[in-house]
Image (cartoon, rainbow, N blue to C red):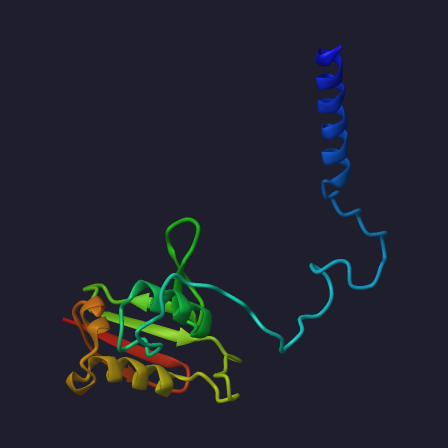
Length: 166
């Protein structure tokens, strides 16, 4: 009799636990407003909440090479290139680029329509300023070492910037 009660108690507990378990949300009906995030126009504003295991030492990309800072910077700043899933560089701010035969000159044509947070266009002069700031000894940028043999950056026109390497 005691075994039968123990078995019934176990079944009752399992039933109660199953009844208290959360259920999967039901699929929204087709056509319900606001149910399909993949369609519709992007919205501006709002918040992104992200957590890191440590605070960055700086959000200035020329003042740090700390991994946490680099991760957060990637959420804030666009780059000329990114590495695609195939392991090859893809243009982000760069629309096209050519490398000289001696591999000492990289010429980049920038995409049109890219802007800073305040609406100022991202142009070749801004790219020149950014890289020359990193190269300036007064900046004392640890990122300079990651630029390898980069010697100079020059804006040719509004969309074209030239990188010279040693």
